[in-house]
Length: 254
Image 1: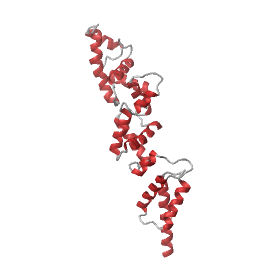
Image 2 (image 1 turned 120 degrees about the vertical axis):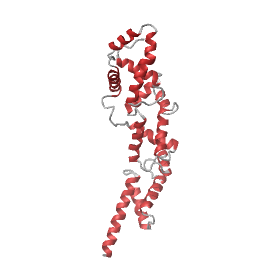
Image 3 (image 1 turned 90 degrees about the vertical axis):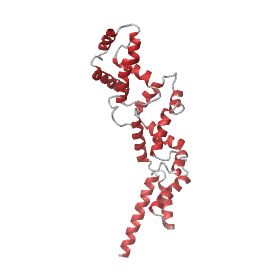
Image 4 (image 1 turned 30 degrees about the vertical axis):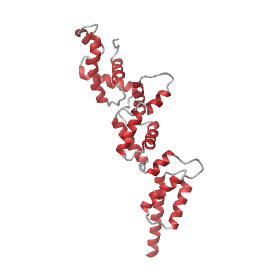
């Protein structure tokens, strides 16, 4: 069946060639040219000749090869994703999936986490299966990758940036106690022993030999602020307490 527009032809290329993979804009431009002068030309030549093929491309406004082909792909991206596709913007769903990957695969470092998030997003039994179960009717797999585009993931580089942005919020994500906390978040109204243990562990890096008074202060910080502050913010509050205490001691000595 002949394409009626360049956008339709780009979409056909995407659906026929993009199988369980992520493509950057530049990679897709190359893929589109290869598709038009490969599979699509072969399909066309079954009924028509080469001169008619080039006339068909003219009708689709694909006469000036590279420039026209690149423009068609860029217009398709805008149609599918919106004019801001080049910017860095991620849906909250993706940040939740990064946390899920840490819990599921117990990722030990950044490189492993990037690999695990990629696995969760692209493996047939990962997020793809969940997405398919949520569809009213069966949808082709390329539609799933269009969905990822709308969430903010188009390339492997996007996954790297997503992970880095998430790690800014959770710098202790590779700590085993933190991963246990991700898997079993505190229930409302009850303190979480794992969270408290993690707070003590991180605070001891600041103050390796805490006095009984300092330990009690740390516990008070936790019980008073556990619902409003992150573990990292509670450690920072404890650091300020230690700094203030040291300053007070110095002034008394002076």
